[in-house]
Image 1: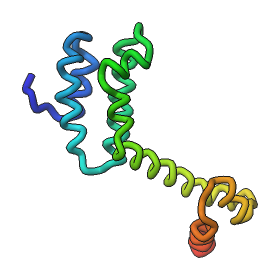
Image 2: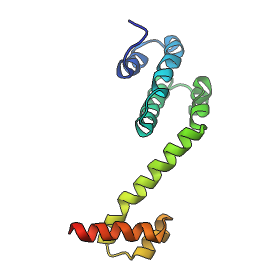
Image 3: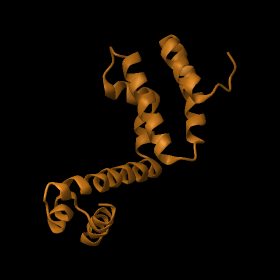
Length: 131
């Protein structure tokens, strides 16, 4: 197979090749993934690749696999932490309408989700305009 496979085929290749070949193929795939402009997509792909690696090396501990492929190095980068924080914020923001529908107050929601009250108020106002 060619060296510049699409990321999706690179992941499939990781699944199909021997463990020894995974050690060769992973760095090539990682270079491609790091070129993705969409940070959320990059994080999701890295999470999926990590899962593939953990299943591929099921007899090893997660720590051993992470060390072998430098996964902790990837997760420790500022970019990864920023994307992770952004994803957590989006999850909290998506929860606000449901909590409002359950009858929770703006201040309660802000406190529970560790958000600014003004941000929860904005979401509440948008929800009331949509209904």
